[in-house]
Image (cartoon, rainbow, N blue to C red):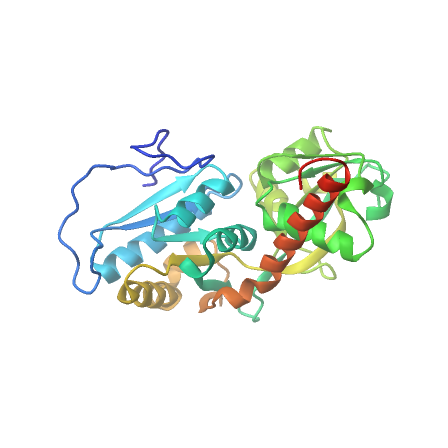
Amino acid sequence: MFQRISGWCGASLVAASLVLAGCGDKAGADAPGFAGMSQIRMAVRGSEDDPRMARRWSAYRDYLQAATGLPVKTFESSDYNGTIQALSSGQVDIATIAGGGYANVYAQVGKLVEPILTIRQAEGDMGYYSALLVKADSPYHSIQDLKGKSLGYVDFNSTSGYLYPRAKMRQQGIDPDSFFGKTSFAGGHTQSVMALENGQFDAAVVEMGGGDPVHGFTTGAPYTMARRGLVNMDDFRIIWAVGPIPNAAIAVRTDRPQAFIDVARGALAALPYDDPELWRDTGQPDGAALTAVDYRHYAEIIALRKADIDQRRARAGGQGGRP
């Protein structure tokens, strides 16, 4: 089971919502080949819109435990920043993290954290999309129609819900900081969809997958919510989509024993083949697998995050604020 902890043992990380239990517990005997490691600490961000995610992380945990002979403790953060700060600080050994979150980690610690695996679909796709969603009965049919209107982002550290669409808007000649009349963060993809449904935004930017802008999509927060009866997809319309965005990564601390990193990469990559039924049960379509990557796979996201921060600092400086 996942552990949710509400307080720190000893020192804390600023603004981090993921915390680790067991501070002060005595470590057990080291596993052969994993010098200094008596357990594996894995961080994941909870998915408020897809309960299958919990089964996926459980499968990862169980495979790591069997392959390494070490107990694996899975810690679930309540927001993006929790996983980012836990991984950056070394409070965990391995984590699942989206591209934008990894770019944040990379900016803090460089190659002390490196992605090792990502999901590749059967047809070879290794990405997903960001889409602008509006109400179907609204007058908005293109992104240009949203000038001066309100837009809901997901989270500052969300790749598809903030970083990537803002970069692509700029490339298309739209300044996201001045084009919209009002922008704010909903806190999650599900929250963004519900805020749009309730009229809090004129449009919301959310993750989409299982297709492309030409042929349509089949996965993403609104589709998952519709399957659960929370919303009706007929109530929404996609008016703009960009991508593909590199799929989320499984990333490790590179200051851990190399033997651990190698075993973790091999064990998790074998999961779809060793137990395809369990793999499908985690929500993966037939033919999907985990494939090896490194930081270069996320080079565009790293660059886009830096450019976005530089742009906002320049704007703040030009308006008399601190850059």
